[in-house]
Image (cartoon, rainbow, N blue to C red; front, side, top):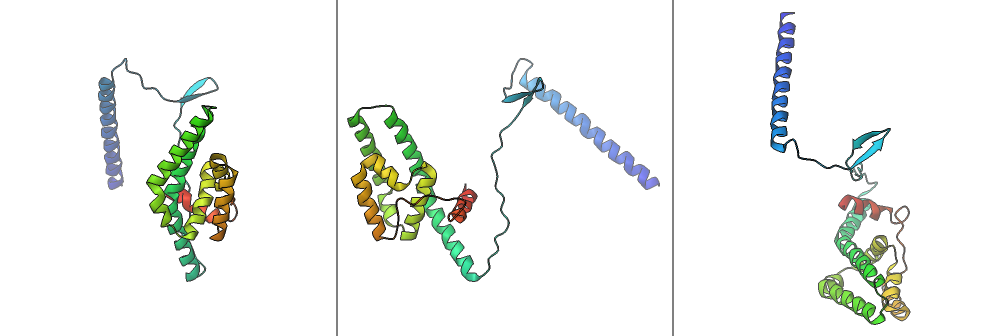
Length: 203
């Protein structure tokens, strides 16, 4: 009983000490901030009360991956490697396409639009042509899918919008020779579900 009583006193002493330390720290913080300073926060009004809030991004949590066989594990590892390699290109392609799309909508002058398209195409070639040449056919197919994910347009539609139908037809025919399809659409809930999980884990 004595030990229990002393233990309670000890806990009470610790809590009291911590409380006064926090009060002193809070007072010091107030002095440092100053009574006329203002901290602006986003807020919502609920039933007449103004409540500050902070936006927290969605976080996806996945269980440890279990494989039925060594073959399935190797297949997944290869897919993850390929997605990881092409994802930065797809992400940047989406940013560049959306930027170009905004710029094209700001003018109706065909010459200016063509100059914008040609400049973007040159920038892409200068920065990535050699690296993209080193992609495997599988990585190229994944990149085509991810471009659709990032732009909301298939690679065929992107080429057609920017370079015309003939160019789109030409590149589609060439892609077909290598077993790819520029018209391939991204399906995050179907055949591309694994790619989507990998992309989210990378992000």
